[in-house]
Length: 409
Image (cartoon, rainbow, N blue to C red; front, side, top):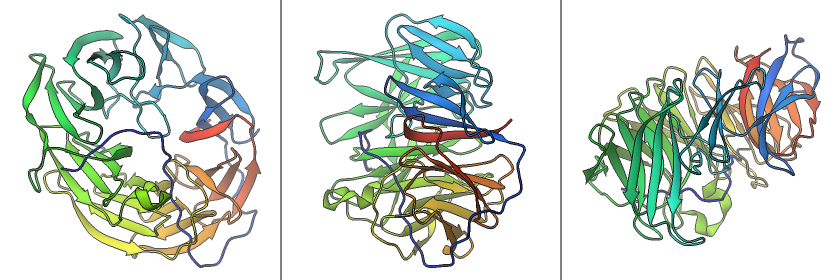
């Protein structure tokens, strides 16, 4: 099996293709949307809620992880778990924790995670050990987020990180650190409070130990699988397809030689179709698009790869790929600007914002409008159909981390 570890690098896409660029103007006025952007400010990371009409931030929320329906935003303040209403900023509940815990990171840029795919269960973690040394013990709490109740405590010797938790709250998947380069994926059974003796193995080759850096991940809509993007220093990148129903996984190899030769192999992103039948892995820096058939959780496989004409990647970003609701179009950040990729042919058909280095992307709920965040924090509103740019504005909220959500007003 390959390997994983979260590290402080940045994910990005850099695809640049020839084609006719659209002009500014175009899309009709919208009813207005709220953009939930995670940013790093001078004081602390936060979620800024930006109005697409006024172009101003309406409120600031603590940086946290949302529930599946976005009615709750969970964050840590000291030794408390805070439940905030994202729509109003009102604090709904504060739950005292038995010590100082933290939310696990969901992306390499530091956006928090720790929830089950449906958002019901939440994991927080803490460690024992001397500062700047490898932890000697790991402690985790399994929290029923809706009930604000700790339902189980996990105490393990050694250094573990959260990887995933199943929707039924019965299976907790962990990364067990063996040394500086190798790791195991382990299954912790909540019923019985025991670490499974068996290592979660790659069903394709039976290997156990893994190496590499985890960039980001996306769960299938039914919650049965977690797909994570990994890169390695001197080897090809891969997608780790983890079953959340049992102790097995699949490693799907992607083209590449490793990031030791440059940043290009760090710049991968994942996007999944709304029905969960297709997953796309895109790297704009190398001009690579891979299509994965995910319709069968017991045999996910790469069915196509394509190369797209590119320029030199000049910037890095996070989560810079989205897919249209009908699954027919990918939009991804290029070395400059954004490009539209037809999923039927895996070819580029349009581009926009050629003078921008795009950091993150988000779609309106109806899929008509695309919001692009530049590496400086400026935002552009773009028509998905025509590629025309309707608005550009800078809410001046701080260094962008990710555009987490675009919601109706």
